[in-house]
Image 1 (cartoon, rainbow, N blue to C red):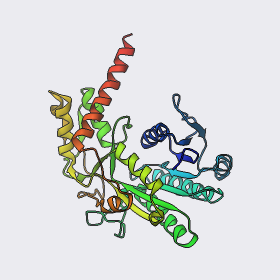
Image 2 (image 1 turned 90 degrees about the horizontal axis):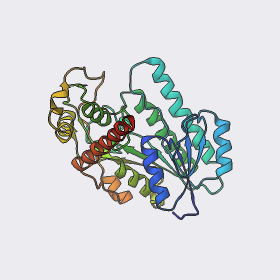
Image 3 (image 1 turned 120 degrees about the vertical axis):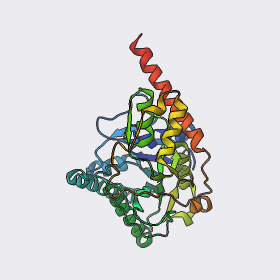
Image 4 (image 1 turned 135 degrees about the vertical axis):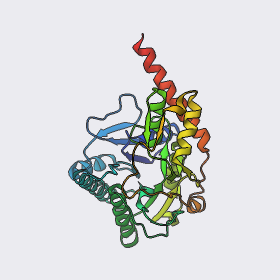
Length: 319
């Protein structure tokens, strides 16, 4: 990748998007960002374009204007619940926006590669550790819609030489994450002295630090041609019980935090995946990528980041 090549990121105002954009720009890349209407970032570098990705004409227009060399498609709805209307909305958003992005990529003369951020939710009820060779059986709308896009990209690569790499991260965490994920909600609750309602926490998850995911995405941009049309798991390679993660975070936060944990206060989700782990052999062999951040180090950095932010807010309120 050279500075002259142009990288377009969808979902650039999301958790992974903000970290990825900052890293690429710091390394001298030319980056443009697509964000949701009304969600422009106030303090940022790199051009921003607020468009509705469901609007095909708007997507085609911005691609015609920018002519990106690479596209990193992060934007998606992450709804995992059981409400029929919201699940249908998630299907429509994830599939239709991805189709629009793909169609727009195919109009760009010098387009080289699309990176699609899928999810290990695509695997669902298959025997762990998840392998890219397994036949997925997703158990929620998020996984179903992401798998649909993956299958579309596989067909296009096979039949129409559309160049893409599909990454399937495990559970991403890190500084700046919103309250729709386990680790961020846990940390914010304990720092605020609030009880944290959770399941018994027996289910295992593979947690991967956001900086490691960013590095995997960048390596996928640069991988040689044999990477085209490949699905690649991105994770830590190790799984841990949710209960143990919560206890670890509470101990990092300090005395009294452990007493705020309310294990068993809410039920498991319908079709909860209890044993969750992913093989990352392909990521090492194909991308030359291995995670660099241990869970303990990543959680320490994340706790400190949230603590610093809380202190800044408190200081502003008392100024």
